[in-house]
Length: 406
Length: 161
Image (cartoon, each protein chain N blue to C red):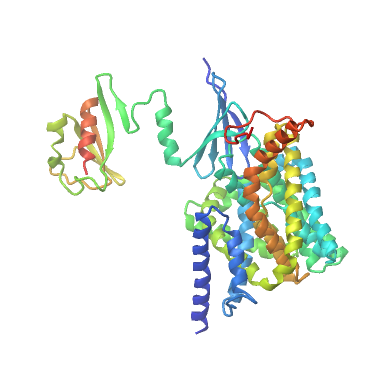
């Protein structure tokens, strides 16, 4: 009978997610916040505690993280990463300084200790490439001149995750300085090796994996990824990073094919992961952290806008495009949850999960809005100041879409 | 005159962007997404950095648009044009066509239009010179040869619901 209960529970979860996804699509929202809320609704302290499928959902969630990072790796070729790193590393450093520090500071202010500070730094640092790419498409800005700048910031963040995740994994595992340094050395060595191998021998690796038959390609890529992720986990490096490096190493046809085949799987298991995260968060623990989450969201939205502005300025883009770049980068999403998930499963600071949940819920909703309205607001503010006879920012002619109230 | 150069910009995670500035100094760009979709964008004069208009096309739509943009273009289904005023075209029999399941003779194609059906493409095979008792099916593609007017009339007949 156990299996029947499991099927019924798991089926209900997936069906509920599908219906929520449709609901989200109707309002042009990202489904991520709804999945999180669904997890909150079901889990401990929620409406319906799940019993039988708990373990299955936990495994699904792990696979979800692995697939999220694999797909991220597949998006980029190794040469993309290397050339971006060379050209834009100052923007990456500014991004890290402006957005990771508020998170770390917040954790220290709340008295959560250094490990939680490192985790929360990651939560506030990494933007959601998925949400942002979708927003750019929806707003018809894919062809805009600032889009390459936005993407380069995202690429650098994703690359930084390959270094950052092993550090967090070591820290939450309670590794000492020596063990932690060794882990980091292994991770950096592996990342460097994979990047080098992918640039030099990417075609060979892809030819080994590549197959005309979708079924075999799916099995080979999925098997290889989960195996590498498991080995990485065994070496205390972090399964997610292993998967990310597999994604980087694959290029060309193999990557294209794997991308189309694995997208639906990624969607399924990533949704399960968000639910799992919600399941482990007690809804009652959210109200106490709502104020810090809101403050953190406001501060890090502003710092992201500043980051984007600076990065676009560096790329020689005029003022309007700078504001658009900043506004587009605000959304945080899946990767903040992935990072917080590491801490939650390790049992660091119990309030961290609820705070991350509230924070992501806020910014995943706010992000598309800032992407849309930062530039018009900045232009309006500049005009407003100009009419008061202060030194205006140089703003180009107003667009027909934003009527001037003279 | 040499062909204008397209500027390419890689968009990591999305695809590649091609930019063209026309002789009239208007700027347009095409973003080639990796899934075959294309985004065509036009830029306004007031803000040269942001798209005034942006259209997302599926791979198939982009293909049709390419055909229409070709300077030598006549029609998407055109196979061949002779100097004698004859054209060869492919015409598809839709599943909703009235001829789906009926024989070729019923269409009275040659009598009505003067165009000839020289072959029928069905799945992976080609059936040359189909006879009047050949039974058509939805999804068949007819290779029709005739004058421009004749082939257009043939397409109209085949298109009847």
